[in-house]
Structure formats: C-alpha cells, structure tokens
Amino acid sequence: MLRAAVPFAVVGALWEALAHSGAFPPRLFPPLEEVALTFARLTASGVLPHHTALTLARLAAGFAAAALVGVLAGIAMGRSRRVEDLLLPLVSIGAPVPGLAYAPLFLLWFGLGDTGSVALVAFVALFPVVLNTWTGVKAVKEIWLRAARTMGADERRLFRHVVLPGAAPYILGGLRLGLAQAWRILVAVEMLAAVPWGLGWLIFGAREFLDTAAMLAGIATIGAIGLALEHLVFGRIERYTVVRWGMMAA
Amino acid sequence: MRHFAAVAAALLAYELVARSGWFAAALVPTLPTIAHTLWTMLADGSMERHAASTLARVFSGLALAAAAGLVLGFAMARSRAVERFVSPLVNALMPIPSLAWAPVFILWFGLGNAATVLIVFYAASFPMLVNAWSGARAVNPLWLRAAAAMGAGGAQLFWKVVVPGAAPFIITGLRLAFQRAWIATVGAEMLAASDFGLGWVIFDAKEFLNADVMLASLAVIGALGYLFERFAFGALERATVLRWGMVRPGQA
Image 1 (cartoon, rainbow over the protein chains, first blue to last red):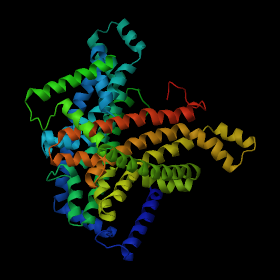
Image 2: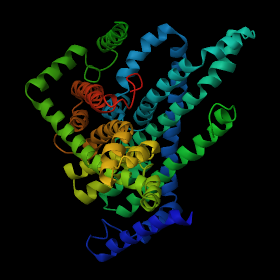
Image 3: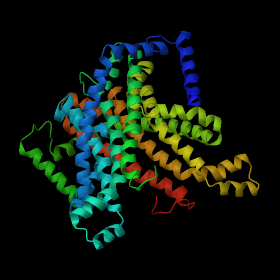
Image 4: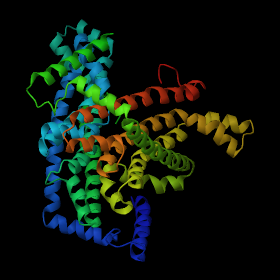
C-alpha cells in the first residue's frame, strides 16, 4: 500500500514544482492544493454531488435498458436460428462504428438533453451485451444439456438451471464491457448534448471560465467512479454468482 | 447470402419509415438521398479530405501510443522497479475516459490538431502498454533459457525471442488501440472543433439539420473501421504471428 503511494508522490511533487515554477499561468496549471480546495468547495456546496448524481442516474437508465434488451436479444439469438439470422448481421455491422459518431444523430432525433444522451448510452452499451450473451448461450456445453435432459429436465428447467448459469460468465463479461463503454460515452455525450447538469458538462463548462482546477476535480471524480464501477460492482456480482457456482476462478 | 437478406430487410424497413411521412424528411432522409449526398461529397473531394484528416489524426495518435506503450510495457516486464512505479499510475489513469481530458487539453494546447492527437494518444496508449507488458511476461521461459543456452545475448534475446514471443499480445494491443483511437478521434473532432474530419462533419451537420450528411459520414466511418479491422490487421497477423506459427488460423 505504502509502496503504491510512491509513484503518486513523485508525480505529485513534479506537478507542484511545475505549477509553482511560474512557467505556466496558474489558471491553466493550478497547484494540487488548489484542485483539492476546489474539490472540497464544490462538494461542500453540493454542486459536485448534484452533477455526479445526475450523471449516475443517466448511466443507470441507459445501462439498465441496454442490459435488459441486450440479454433478452442475446438469449433469443442463441436459442433460435431464425432470430440469429436476422439480428447477427445487424449487430456485426453496428458494433464497429464508434458509438460517439451517432451522438449528433441521436441528439437530432431525440432532442438535446436527457432523452438523447440516455438513448445513445443504451445503444452503445447494447452491442457488447448482445454479442457476449449470444456467445455465452452458444458456449453452454452440449454434454450438460444432454445430461440434464437425460435426468428429465423440461425445456423451462433446462433454461433456468443449465443454460442461464452456463452462459452467466459471458453475460457478466458483456455487461461489464457494456458498462465501461456506457461510462466513456456518457461523459463525452454530456459535453455535446448541452445538458444543464452532469460531470461531463461540469468539465466542459469549466473551460469557459478557464477553471482548470474544477476540471481536474471533475476528472478525478470521473476516474474514481470508473474504478468503483469496475471493481466494486462487478467484482462483487461475480463473487456471488459465477465464482460461487464454480464456473470461474475467483 | 442470409446476412445479405437481413441487411436488405433492415434497409427496406428504414426506407419505409423514411417514406411514411411520420418524421420530418430532413431528420430521416431516404436512402437515395443519403446515397446522393455521399456521392456528391465523394465527387467534390470533400469527403476524401475529411476522411484523410481523420485518418491522419488516428494514425499520429496511434503511432505515438504504440511507441510509448511498447517501450514502457517492455521496460515494465523487464524491471521490477519500473513496474512498481508505473503500474499504480496506469491503474489510476486508465479508468478516466480519454474524452474527459478534452477540455483540459483544449485549454492547454488550443483547439485543433495538438489537442486531438493528444486525446487519441491518451486513449490508445493504455491497451498498447498493458498488452506489451503482459505479452513480454507471457513469453515462455523455456524459450528464453534455450536461446540463452545457445549463446544469445541481451539484444538478440530481446529482438529474436521476446518481441516475436510477445507479438500475438502486441497485435491484440494494436487492434484495441486502433478501436479506441478511432472513437477518441471522432469524439475529439466534435469537441475540439477543427475544420476537417469526419467527426467534425457529423457534428457540424447537426447545426444545419443535414441528417443526410450525418448518415453518409457515418457510413464512411463504419466502412473505414471495418476495412482496417478486416484487412490491415488481418494482413499484419498473417505476415507475423500466423507465419511464425505462434497462433493457429482458427484462433486468430
């Protein structure tokens, strides 16, 4: 733990030295104590928590829609040949286009603000979820299916007790990727969509006032949330499901 | 053939919606309108110029990221001290989306190419670095010992064993880095308002409600991404790791 702090101390000291050297205007290159002060000020005044809450609400709405539609579509694709034929080409065409390229189109179609940004987040997060769920359902071992059938499982139980747990590691992997992509896109789209609140907007708006300290405080918050989503949320879900079922090593 | 049918069905559905009159024609242009716009932009050379500026930004950022990522990644695999110093920093910076830096970079470096390329560099370096690092660590120690026993020295060991051994990871890193760079470029072009580039065209078209220009540019973005992914990286793989027998064709 202490050892991990060394690089941060070195980089921090370098930053401080540069910021205090007067080589750059302090407005553009604020010393760390000012960033920390701004962070504390924005947190105490409730501005930063409000931005964060709205960003997280958009993320939750977009990601929930993507997860629901994506898992259902992925399962349908894995189970039915016809659905697979219909959806797979569309998904494989849509997936490689950078999601952000759709942003102006979505803003045009759904309007500036929440609807457009949430729709885009959902759309972008959908692809990894669909593709992984589909792969997962296809990857369920044939022998498990046959064994369960021999033991008299009907279709319904086969699905609930074999297919779903069997595909779970892939589905979780897809959800994880989807959430990471949703997060990246959301921050960017908040800058473009001119929403009145949100972390992306906080950073972008601060540019107008040359408030670099506020930008850096916003970026630190974004990084912390990204880290928390990845490690706390998904690490925990994995431990309670696929690791406990012995599908994956901890 | 089946794939073709599904795409044709989707296009047909789109065309029907576009012609139904439910939505404003400016927002949902018909396919012939989009094709016509695409053709006009290709014919007067503007689309080529936009695509060329975008690709130039993607590849400058990617080249910088590859250079920095490979050097640092190999150094991390080689030395515990470097690894201990760099990996906490990488873990802290990686979860920050590259586009979050856009406003800061714009303030520091001004609107235009420098800020855009830096954003792309930021986006592309992490997959490069992480893959070079894991690739170099994944080199079979038996190969290193065998080569050392046959009298290979430091430089030779590095170029003839470590680099080819890590190549499958490095190519995966390049692939991921390219995808990230592509997204970051399009986003950065929208935010850092240059005057050429596919991201900029799409964003600019919004002001004039030119949905046909947006969809035509989207098609170009999709086609370019697909071509690079399919042909450039496929060719790179065939020329290196497949030819060396590092991965089997099915796996690649």
